[in-house]
Amino acid sequence: MPSERADLAVWAEEEGILFGLSEAALRFHEIEMTWLPRELALLSEISIPIERGLAQSLIQSREHEVAPITEIVGCRAVPCAANAFLEAGRRQITGAGGEPLPAAFSTVSDHQAYRDGTDFQYGFADVSDEEFSAAVNAVQNFVVNALATSELRLGRNLNVSSFPLGRDVGRQLPLREGHWIDQRLLELTLFWQMVRAQQAVALPAIDPNPGAFQRVFPATTTWPRDSVEAGLESPAELAESLMQDMRQETHTYVSGLKLDRREIDGLWHVNIEGVATGGDPYLENVICLGRLTPNKTGVVIDDWNRWITEKSPHVNYGGLTIRLGDIPHSGILPSQYSLEPVDDQETLQKKSAARRKLIQTLVSHGRTQRIDSLFTAAGIKEPAVGETRIVRALFGRAMTRKQLAGEVGCNPFTLHKNGWLPRLLEKQIVIYHPGVGGYYLRDFPPLEGI
Image 1 (cartoon, one colour):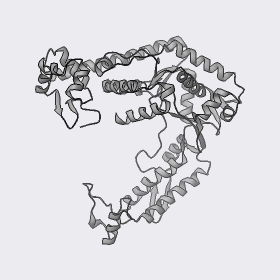
Image 2: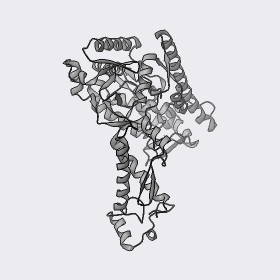
Image 3: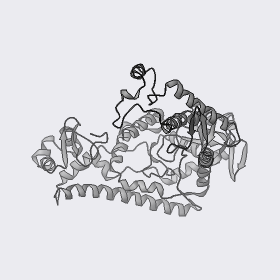
Image 4: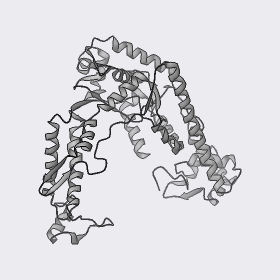
């Protein structure tokens, strides 16, 4: 969770004023994530209902997604070269326990150079940095030459600082032939700008499917003050009808712009260069804020993965055979969508409502089941209300007695006077350790770990 909170903090810093991500909203999201059951992850593989046109745009977007050449050439070359040296029997510096082995080096001076950080920094005691860098350069040159052929298509992405689908902060949308963007995806991006202009608050989707819309709350939302409240019910989101009206308004707006349009693979695209210079104040503002930024040329990811799998490319250099597909997951994985295209709005609303109900049931059942299981395992058949509130408050968190009393809603002395905390400590449902931050649940320790 710390990494997710860090991402949200960046999001808040970049979008805070427009998207209203207050500390209270961030804390609510951090708390609610501790309540999510593991079973919820299964929904990422279950197709999410989505309007057919948008589904087609997202699927085609995935098929033409682009990775920067620096990622292809730079990040892949080092592990490929290291794998080749390992396969050739070159001596690794560390042993099975991860400790450096001085005896692996040919000379004392080589070992000293490693310790000083001036040579042998790639994990091999008999491969100097110069030799390793030469092998890496050979791989890079090979890939650059391959990119210059017709085997691999080149392209560009449009960097979007915020996008309404999935849990990621931003998104990269492919530009066909370098400057044509899918009109639906452009509309979706601009719709998100409109939502932000309403001073609304956006939080990542609970649904783990990357095709799920993020949640939007009114600017006037009163956020739960503690984990007990957050565990009971989430605040009300903006009405679905209002969101649909804004999307329709965005569609009308984009359709009325004087932009170059072209049908590519059955879907309408607009020229992004025309968007940037179209003379429309709203779009110019979006461009100036860096919300839509074309990046440098890259390679189409599907082409790269196919090339790695089917061609088994390799580089012969200095007696080494450097295989680009040997290392696990050497192919670059594009965004995965599991979508169920739906043709009419009424059916879409019914299917979406059924999925939301399933999520609510999973979350509610997960909370109750996890709390009940803790008491059952400890032999407590009928826990006191205060004991249940303590357990709710400590899910994935550590607290001092004063903090815990504030979450439960009582005086710190009441925790002991009523026997709630002593019994939980005796049954080892709750553990106390000042180094961790105070009281925490043995089976659900602080998110930061102990």
